[in-house]
Structures are given as structure tokens and as C-alpha cells.
Length: 374
Ligand code: TRH
Image (cartoon, rainbow, N blue to C red; front, side, top):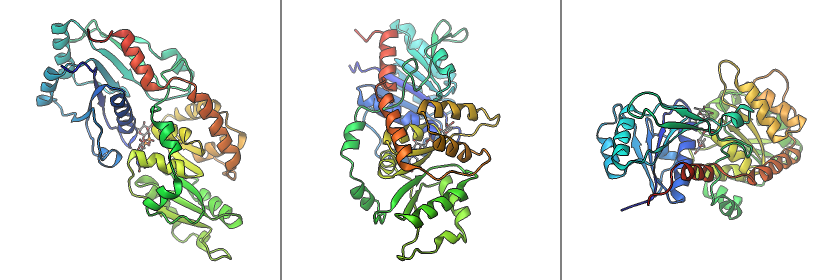
């Protein structure tokens, strides 16, 4: 009999790739730490490029409505830990089946509501708060709010155990050659974004930087970033070659990368443009200068979230101002200051590396709430 704890993680893909990106990374890390994971997802198509090799210990299951035959899996391996990611409501028939199993064994699963990442102050207040379940087959159980975050009083950040060793062994020249990216010593800039209004300004800046010193190569990620760049590049004058015959700014359009290679991209570049929830953390761990495009919310709720993040980062004024304009506030983008900005990332990384990571905190929390099987 397999006594490894069984996690059931539920993920609904709202739009973009952050929901499944975070859930996959968490699932894979829990499996690396000896847990068994069933990842229930309503649209797992992005996993084909994000994680083409899958992961031992993680079973990806379609979140159909109703769950139907897949519920049989609960008979084989009852649920120990339930995670509803980003406020998705777990399928009621799953809860009912879980409650039935718990009735038989006398042990309730630990039920976690994994929230979005923010550096705002409310996160410390709300982290690990209980929410009693009042109705339905699980009435009498407790759901726990779990907030990832940037301080010791929060749930921490996703940071795999294997990350430092992977990063230390990374060689950018070899990786770039393996991807077919023709690198001749240019300053490398990655771009993962939505449709930032200041994109044309950025391209101008990069071309100017590439005119005065080393040329710049922009590595544009697949999807919305590629469409956004292609919409502005047509007929741009910065395509004129320099005196040495090299273009001041060259652009490479990338295919969809696996999550591992997405990390490699961030490690390879001197400046990274990241977006949303997962890649901003990867930008931090990469340790290079980075700029974050926050996921925009209709009621402008993202603006205080952005400011809280910049406070946490201890961003110098030029980086703060760049972020504001990049995120749609009026103004001119200041010139990127790579030495200053990368020093800022490295100092923040150092502070954050001293904190306990999200997977460790989740495992400790579950052990505390539910002692291991006898
Ligand atoms: O895609 P996103 O904008 O996701 C968003 C945000 O997380 C937002 O906060 C959330 O509310 C919304 O989804 C629903 O950015 P994010 O979070 O960085 O997720 C992208 C994932 O895709 C990340 O795990 C990295 C991965 N990725 C690859 O693996 N390969 C690639 O080639 C690219 C471009 C991304």
C-alpha cells in the first residue's frame, strides 16, 4: 500500500497561462518531495508545451462536468489534501465522494484555498485563516486560506529545491546555440508581456542602446508578446544598420518553450520583461534586471498591487518609474539602467531566499493539521 500523501489540486484556466503555470510548478515540486498529485484541470492544453515530458508522481486529469468516471480514482487513492487554486470551486461530486471516504476512514482531508500572489499588507492578515464549511456533504470541515507572499508571515514563494543547482550548471552560450538563437555577444532582452502601450517606446530605447554600445537582441516569447511586437515593428526606422553593419536591434521570435526552458531564457538574458503571477517570481530567481507587467484588472486594483511589489523590491526611482509607464500610466520610459536594476533584483533575491518556500510551508501546514498515516 502506497502511504505517500495524496494531493488533489483543482485548477480552472481563466485566461493566459498563470493558473496552470503555477499549479503545474507546484504539482511537480510536491511530487519531487515524495507526494502523489492529481491535477484536475478544465483545459490542460498548455501543458503540451509547458511540460511536454510530464512528471513522475503527477497525474493530470480532465476536470469534466460532472467528473464522472474519474471519481473512481478516489476509491483507489483517497484524497488527503485538497487544493482549490485561485478561488475555483471544487466540483461538488468530488467533495461528496471525499466526504464518503473520510466517513469510512475517520480522517478528513486538509482543504486549502490557494490564493493569488500579492505583496500587499492584507496577505499577512489573511494567510492561514480558517473558513468553516457550513453546508453540503463536507459540513463541519474547515477550509484554510493559503496566501503566497514575500514575507515570513505569508505562505512564501514557489522555489524548487533543485533550482540553485540547475542555475549553477547553466551555460547560456550552449543553451542559446541549442535553441538556434544566433548570439554574437549582443545584450539579450527577453519579452513576455500583454500589449503594453509603451512597447514602441521600448523598442526605440533598445535600438538607441544598441546604437551606442553592444547591439541588442530581443527574444520575444510566443503568443501575445509576438503579436504585440509584430504590430509595432512594421516600418520602424531603427532597423537601419549601424556603421559596423550590424543592426542596433535584432528580434528573434521564439516558439512556446517548456517551463524549464522558459527559466533558461530568463537566466540567459540581461534584462527580462515578465508578466502575471508565475513569471515575475521566475524573474526574481533569475537574478537579472527585470520589469513586470502586472495582470490588469478592470477596477485598477492592480495599481496598488504593483506599488506594493515595487516597495517590496526596494526599486530605485528609475525602475519604479519604468514600471509605472510600462503598466500604462502616462509618461516617458526612462532608459534602462541594467547595473542598478540587476543589483536591485539580486538584493531582493537574497532577502527572499532566506524565507521558507511555498511547497515547504504547505507540507508543514498539512502535517500540522493532519498527522501522517499510521
Ligand atoms: O500568462 P500569464 O499572464 O498568466 C496570468 C497571470 O498569472 C495572472 O496573474 C492571472 O490572474 C491570469 O494568468 C489568470 O503570466 P504567468 O503567471 O507568468 O504565467 C505564464 C506561464 O507560462 C509561466 O508558468 C511561464 C509559462 N511559459 C512557458 O512555460 N513557456 C513559454 O514559452 C512562455 C511564454 C510562458
